[in-house]
Image (cartoon, rainbow, N blue to C red; front, side, top):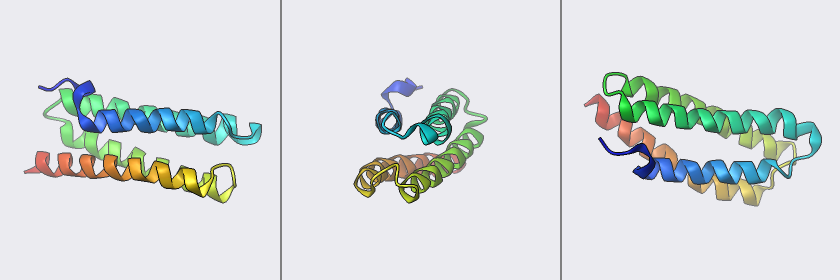
Amino acid sequence: MVMYSQLPIYRDSYLLLTEIYQATSKFPRDYKYTLGQDMKRDCLTLFRDLYGANVSVENRVRHLENFLTSFELLKIEMRLCVDLNVLSVKKLAQLSLLMDSVAKQAAAWRKKTKQ
């Protein structure tokens, strides 16, 4: 079993987490403690599922499904941030590149696990 911290999906997700923490620290007060906190919480939930998927072979698909569900919620929250003008389109584009990488890795891992 590979240490979860050495997985490329973990490294990319961690980079995404740090970017989200930096971006939400600049949110206006109205959004920092609501939407910003939710985004940080949802991103941390991703790590619980990554860890679970790595250590639990019999529940791996369930953890990956939970990961992808939380991931979709995070994408919606980021789109909402742009619509509310608390996150720039440029920053969203930067985060979207990371998110695409993470999504592809998670989907491939889930597909391989189901086989």
